[in-house]
Amino acid sequence: MKTAIVRHILVKDKDLAQQLKQKILDGADFTKIAKQHSTCNSAKRGGELGEVKKGDLVAPIDKAVFSLAERELHGPIKSQFGFHLLEIKFRMDF
Image 1 (tube, rainbow, N blue to C red):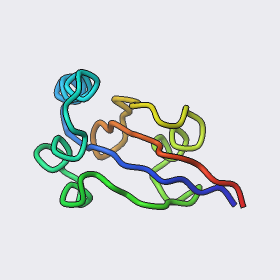
Image 2: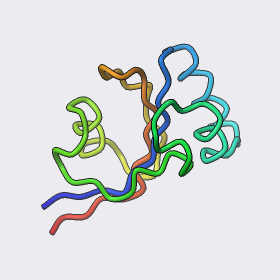
Image 3: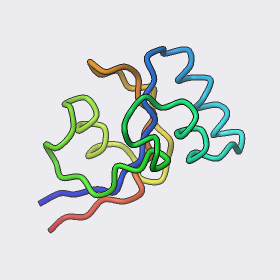
């Protein structure tokens, strides 16, 4: 079974997602940005989704989590909820 440790930031606007991504790439703290801007319930945890299994997340995010490089900031990725910035901390295969 594939699982991953993931954190993310969800916002409604693609431009805002791009701006936040750039701030993080420039050294801003992911956790603080998530707490300030993310509309997901995970915002209070700094964007931490914890361990997720393949199929747990909405399709575009699930696909990204299990196909993109680990330990990089990805996005914005569009879903029906808005635009996501993702960090895949690591993946495991059981």
